[in-house]
Image 1 (cartoon, rainbow, N blue to C red):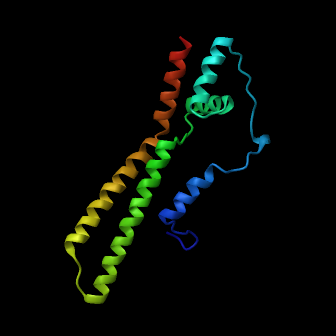
Image 2: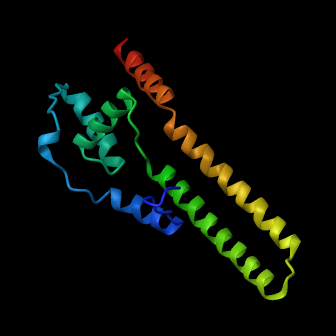
Image 3: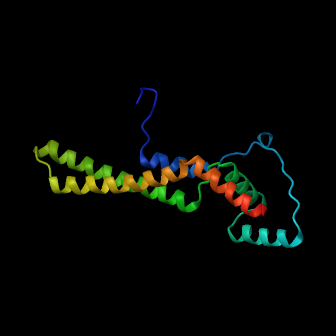
Length: 153
């Protein structure tokens, strides 16, 4: 890590994730797309969007972004990332306590160290799997296109 880069702690990352939802929208950066729907199509679409707590505009935007392969972070995925980061933070604190005990006594509880190491490996693997699925652009584009192609038939 270079001197100009800061190391983000799990709490900082969670705060950054939470702040993402509160960003200001620049209307000049968007294109408007009109969609004609039959009454029954609109009613069914609108009911589904409302049931998910979305506006019709946001539901259409999510669909378009998924078809284009853009990243959409759903609540469950966001929660999984936040939980993994929190758990890693707790493990980091426990390892710091082990280090402090070692500095004071010259001894370390190897069973506790092994348990924390295993817990870290488990949490990191969960985080890694979540991030890999999110960052697989080719899979997201293919999934969106398959859904679009299926709908076009």
